[in-house]
Image (tube, rainbow, N blue to C red; front, side, top):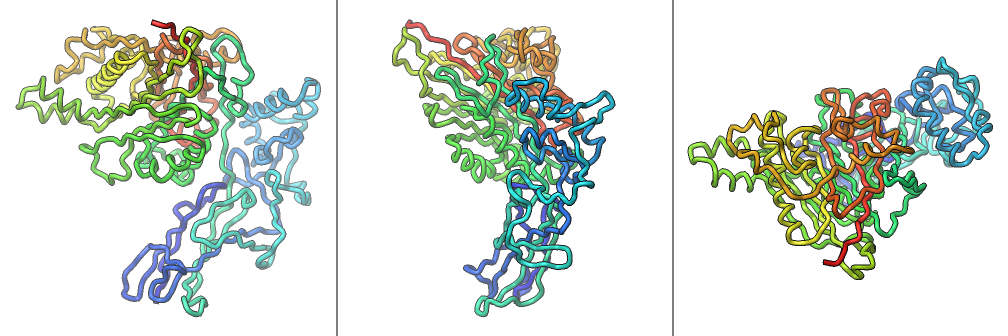
Length: 603
């Protein structure tokens, strides 16, 4: 008879909105072991599996801390409640937790006050006074003294549904699911889930053998960071530019997002031991990344480190629901030795209502390496040369046609094309020559496209190169100083003469615009910039490295920067001090720029 050997969950901590799929190990009568889902429609040896999910609710109401979601809340901020902010944001596990989080928590209050409160005197009444010792003199309630309050709720939904399934002692079990997988809802927050699995006779529909059960930890809400705003750099603070939720692109502008999302294959607990295991799991990260990406509402999205299977099974279909068309270029596999489904690549998405696809180019640096060695390297050295140059990296270049108008009176009806390059130069830091050669190869290819059409260029990606490095200098300045220290490493002679390391594209880093802003919210961003390089202080932040590797470059002769997504600072990462974290699911941060096409004069 079919029997269940083992049942367990990949992660013990369930999160609202993240699918739970138990691992069920089965033994067949012939002693073989399977992990297939044996349903009533596809029984095995006359038996199938019946599943049940229950929410266990004790008579004691529980809320979870907004900062430490695995901890029970003991305090609630009344300012959040009165301002009608999401109730989950109001809970804290201790006075110290509230004090430590106040610098970030107060931002929620300030934004709510600026949105709905015209009388500045009311702000103190609503939000309480926070003194220099980090404690409130009003505005907080100790939840241990208010347990009798029966109106405790999760958002607008009551914690307790009306129907009772089973009751045992002080616990009530509500049935919430009848399939193998279950996605916790907001109603589950703060409660333990129970999963039951039993073998059932296909004819009698009666259970045979024991019921296998497992209990989870309390369901926690998905942590949500404070929204990042879009900051105007055009000199005019347009209110719509300051809030992504309220932004509607004007006719002649469009937004571009670049984001290394951290491939699951690289997200190991050894590398990121500081990140909780549940927050590092792909089932959690994919939902958190999707929420973030969709929330930016970018017209063009360039993602790096997208696994092939995740592109096909998750990102392409999910972003399709939001109106995006998807293109993908998988890395080549001459070096890669793992499962081909998990090899990553570059994915570019664009909104169908804003752009149409004209042409796609694929750059495989391995092929360029083969051509280079055939032309320059003696036969006896080719193997060593290829071992150094072949790194499986690729670039995806897409030509799009805008469906919005910004053609100017001089060119009525002229097509507005945009060329978008998306790449990940994933090369070890010791191979500076290879990194620079790949960037130069990409730029020479883009030069050919630019020569064939009057077209704005966008170059996005993770270049694994800090500001001031030779690849960054080539991108931003169009050339590399022959005395640059990066040129000292060139065992194959592929960088000589240094005079050839040039390009004619008028590229400028979008985020350097923050360095030129002297007023308003843009001024606040300048302290998050490196004044020596006019680039962000960091776009990649782990325990071992903090610095900038990601860029959005644009052709300054045909595009202008209107606004930029605000940068994070180390304080914004709260207690985590490194990425990924429960709030931010990659070790990189997303970059986003809003561009306006310059009117083109007739030639």
